Amino acid sequence: MSAFRPGSEPRRLRPWEEARGPLDEMQDVPGCLLARIGPVTVALPDELRDRLQGLTGRVIAILRTDNDYRLRVVDGQ
Image (tube, rainbow, N blue to C red):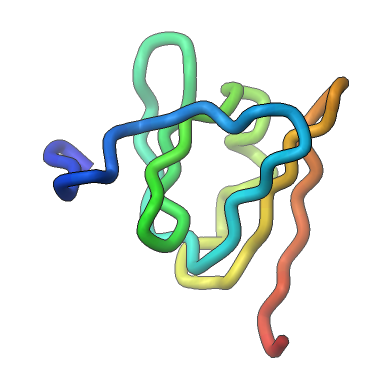
């Protein structure tokens, strides 16, 4: 992810916003983890790295709540 697609600059999810789509790739940057989920590149907390490992290519959804991030795999829907 050294170059982002136009219109896909990294963004942070707002509370109760969800990113959903295939997890294309991840990149560690200082202070966060960048994940390309479908057409969107999302800046996520470093703590999600372990939970996202091994999910590249799978359809996932990440929901930011008031307190944390919720992750689910949605393959087959």
